[in-house]
Image (cartoon, rainbow, N blue to C red; front, side):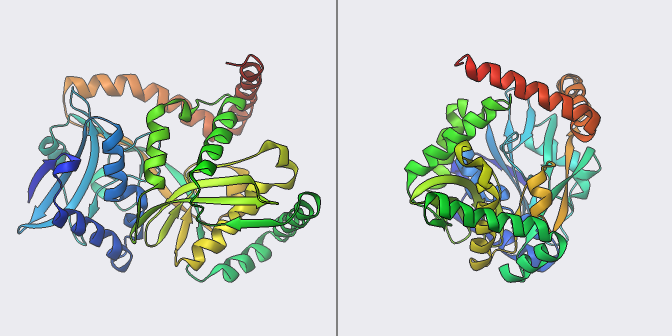
Length: 366
């Protein structure tokens, strides 16, 4: 096995096509998660335009590409999964039967450590170094939207009945409701980011859109369109006024739930749930096999999901001072966060405190 490391602009058209082909065929070889758009060359190249240190390791066997690992490298040799912090799926895209040694791969990449927090399942060499595993709910659509809707009615009849009733009420109160699966108006993307930013602040969370590079990244991905990858803006309208929207990524078979938000003035109608049902119908019509709702427990995810995938977090590390130092700083923070998030008796008071702080911050106009 030969491993070479490239900057995004150095990746040849042949290698990029091979990467896309591996993703396109992944479901045929029992690794459907490798088709996730966060693992695509387009996502890596977009991150490369906005962040320094983006690299792509290409592993070859008999001269042919066998695996692609995108990552970000610091000046000290600390590696992070590409887009760590905003990416919902990470790992090495590889051909069937390909095996690798995680630490040898790190050495070839010039890394002392590689950190991940949404490792796709089936990556045994990396999973051996995982510190925790989490559920990532999904909506299965490979049997079509009608089958999915029937599943919801059988499992949660009150949920689906109530959501559809709210949609009818919304139409009576505010005008005709319509859903656009792939909105091309960039002004609505700006509206969505404004809603999401306000939501982060209102709930006491860190505002991702306070970082200009994330705003630029979404705009870049919004304009990225190919058969194998696209940024998709989905919007729910009432009387031609946007009231809920979502921006995510899609590959040939997977649509990711990434940034959903809605106008709080319409909260009583549950516009986010109505929009997600529209997303499911639109994605099924596009031939999508499943929507990945992303790691994290939320009531709306539990209501919409058909099953769960598993993702892992952790790091592969060499015996190196930089790796030891990085783990010493990061491990306690991760452990505390995971303990709080997985224990309701801790999460609920912490969540209430964050929301209280968010309200104070919002009133202060910060």
